[in-house]
Length: 399
Image (cartoon, rainbow, N blue to C red; front, side):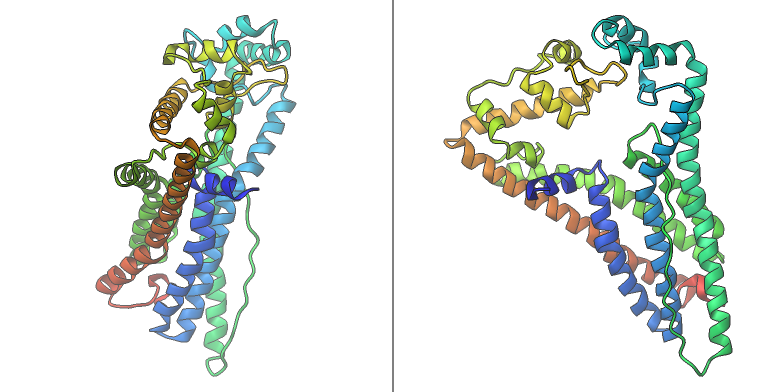
């Protein structure tokens, strides 16, 4: 993967990449260090117990939270396939619209995409059963991660601590060092985007962690911590990215709202220069445009950046729902970027500056979000913990 593709992935705040970077590469290692130092103020034994619990909790949860969606989703799709259905039939198509819907698409694509239409017909004729299968998929892929992360993992973690503390009490004169390994538990979700499913399981995780807290102080701390983590992971980075991009326009007079990978595309820039990007005139024309011009540059851009899917014969996949609002916003951003680029004397120079600024914004977003998650939030929790409990140690480890 090229550097620009990595920057693009990390800059997509509706994807998993920035969550992985913040969570596994920055936030957790920093939290482990802070946890050890904070509990060392009580004792070395307390510090060892606290950092071991945090290590298992953080990385075990991340394994389930991020690794899960692919595994359980695939398993559920296989079950749905064995029942004779294609899980790729989008549930949104059951609501008929003037330009797309399951019945509408069956009529429109029965000659162009007969195999895909068979999947639509099967789902349409057995609507209740198909919807139940998809509902079951959603339940399995959200409730299992919630149970694992919110209830089972912390209980097992606490049991391990109890066992080790008994050994430590029995050997007070001997310093006991424990190297703990854990198996990442995997689970997944269906029907929503992976990030949205992760947000749902995060809510369930918060409930589970509060429920399994060993005392009311630990419950209060876990409730506050997990709620703030949800905000800093799923809400704050999106608004921060918008703010940084707006600030870049004011400071550098450079539009950086598009994906850096697209702004770095020489063919895209050439098309802007030549005025060769034909786009739908309104949101109402989007689907008609995509179907009429499957090999058009804009249609291919929508395929890459807006989730539009085409079959091998370049017929739009009738089983998929088209988010016309997202495409309409994408169109406006291209028009805005094109207008700004044409104002400059050198299109290539403008684009390179835009990519550099956007890359810096992405790095700043990850850095600021990670600092808040890995340093500011833990320090705030430590401060509140001492004020409320009168101790610097983990509340769940106190007698």
